[in-house]
Image (cartoon, rainbow over all chains, first blue to last red; front, side):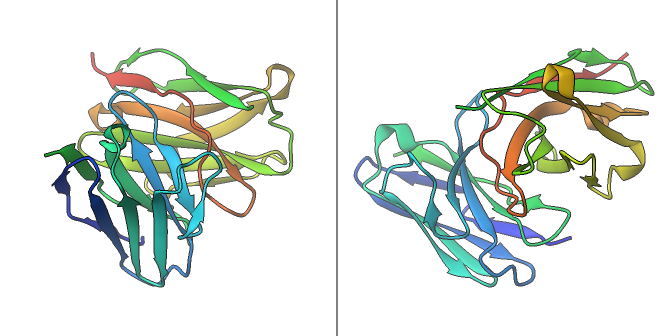
Length: 107
Length: 120
């Protein structure tokens, strides 16, 4: 199975800050990577797919980059509604796997 | 706009079978454009992909669960379902159904999720 490792596991930031979350795959996955946002008690929501494509309806302050084994999710200009947990997911090979999550909290 | 909704018992006894249904509205489970998926989330294991079913009836299951899984459709009700046999406490989780475009396993949308607890 492909292991997905996110860092950091926890980040504290302020409204307006720029935050970057990293996801590393245990083997190359091309651009077959997605990012999700999850708020307490809710289902994950797709933000980014194919490493850098913004899902329809998602604000442009979210962006993704990377290929192969190293990927980043950047949130530029944090808004109060962005404080949540973020997960990466590889879609390159079965079984599909997720990162352990990065919790973004208000400083 | 397509919406998914999970339903099923919230409590299952150990060694019994967990059965869940996902009802799809605003879209058809017979579409060849999508793969209908189950994912679960537990505090101990995080998000875990369970498997998917395609309109043709073909399936792909997580090898860690494969021997205990069955997925199927009820096209008359526009639903797909999940059965997990011989459950243990390790199967306690929030279970989500989700849709993925065929050949691109990115999940959107998701159902709201349903908590299943395995306990006697």
